Length: 162
Image 1 (cartoon, rainbow, N blue to C red):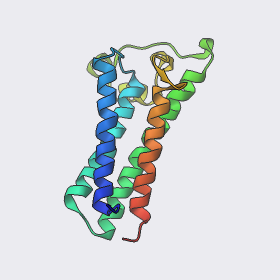
Image 2: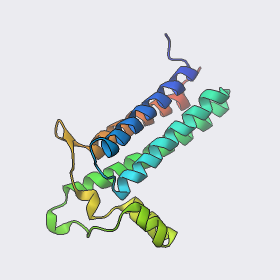
Image 3: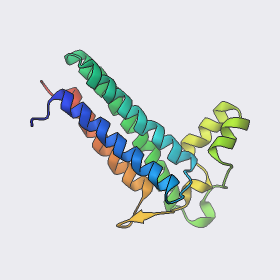
């Protein structure tokens, strides 16, 4: 089956569903509590899938495909930046790791919105903990790989001729 524009959007949606299924499995079955940066990464993953689902359902022409692809690309790049930030925090020596903060739900309930968003995008000491690895790559490393793949698919959607 050729990778048509519509099929590529479906592929992006399926990739996002797999990424979210893995995240929810790790949270609910394994018991890994997501840190603020993890929650932010989930939001960007969902955004990428949202744009691809809209494009799949809408099946736009060339201009619309470029708009949806650009929105998906920007969402994937923003998610990759958050993943990179978490990888950087994980690489810090123990004495340079920022202090741990409260959970995301507590922050959203009690902190001013801008303060909660700042922590969700910059992270805290909880984000520096490496709780799980596969082949020596932590969760944000795998998420970064996923964001790179999603960004490339969206870039291809923007640049392809047909």
